[in-house]
Amino acid sequence: MSTRLAPQFLRFGAVGIAGLAVDLAVLFVLAPLLGWYAGRVVSFVAAASATWWLNRRFTFSISTGVAASRSDIWRQYGRYIFSMLGGAAINYGVYVLTLHWVHAAFAPALGVALGSCAGLLANFTAARRLVFKAPSSVRMQPLSSWPPVARAGLVGVFTDIDDTLTTDGAITPDALAALGALKAAGLQVIAITGRPVGWSVPFATAWPIDAIVAENGAVALVPPSTPGGALSKRYLQDGPTRAANYARMQQVLARIEGEIPGAVRATDSPGRETDIAIDHSEFVHLDEAQIAAVVALMQAEGMHATVSSIHINGWYGDHNKLEGARWIARALQGRTLDDEMDRWAYVGDSTNDQLMFKTFAHSIGVANVARFVPKLAHLPRYVAQGERGAGFAEVVAAVLAAR
Image 1 (cartoon, rainbow, N blue to C red):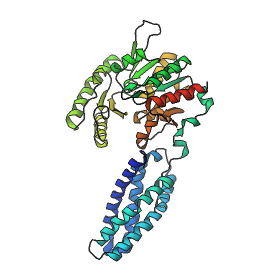
Image 2: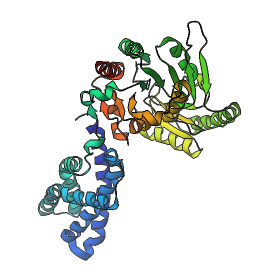
Image 3: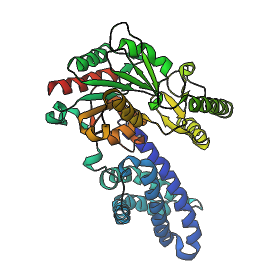
Image 4: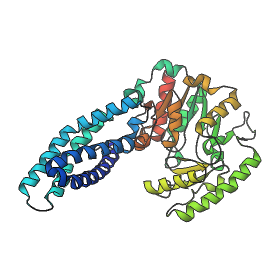
């Protein structure tokens, strides 16, 4: 089973367990009134309705991330109930056979459990292919389908850093060469990252780029325009606002580390000025429940929170990667990004890139974005075959081939 299907199937199975609980509860309530057979029909409909809602919200949320009208939702519900008929036939057949062969008080419960397991795979396939299948407009397309005329019209490329340019924390030679090739071709090249400004300083001076926007849009580092010049640091917030926010964020950081087992600040925290970060996959591993707990605490404290491929970032203010992109395009080139969104591309890999994936007409994921696809409400339009730096180099090659 593929890396995308396995988590989805596990979530479908978890929803199935919840459906089993509904099934049993309704059956045992109604059996004294309707009997074990008719009662099971009603309990099955109740369980199917519950699992439709849970699968819509939980298992296949990527396919329902787009807005839907009430009529669309009811049609989807109808398709779901109808698509479950194959699994229902298997489910009910196993239930009847169990009651026929097993003469014991636990036979109805055993029949429900065995029937549910037997129908699980058929139901998953039907749900995924017939009910919650994402429309083609929201599925990722191979990079080769990116029209050459669209690539030829680009004036610049925004890119994430971690796991987009880097592998194991270091930029790969092919990705570094690709940045240089973009610059040599006359395109603007701007990296936007959740990493701290202090961590970003060496790269802003060493890489062939026009700027690094760090801390999810709050701080920009602009290399000197002439050799020997000084690196420029620009802030989106004023000094007093940053100071007040910093003090509040340190209190939240202390709460997180004190209240959530396993949660520790990222090792790059000393270089942070406008946000905080909790490590979940760089040097520490947090499970989904721990990550969700960190995000919930940040949000309860009034912070914005986002999850990258390695960190959970939280901050005060209305900035994000998209606002940072708008700000730096205006500050550096006097360009209004929203007026020319079709002339820029964005390359990323994780959940904190999904606002950029949603907004940019030319959004591309490197192949390791597949790890986050089940969690993304907005997918990149295109996906590279290569992972991380190799995927970024593949994107650049596609851009330059059209010029």
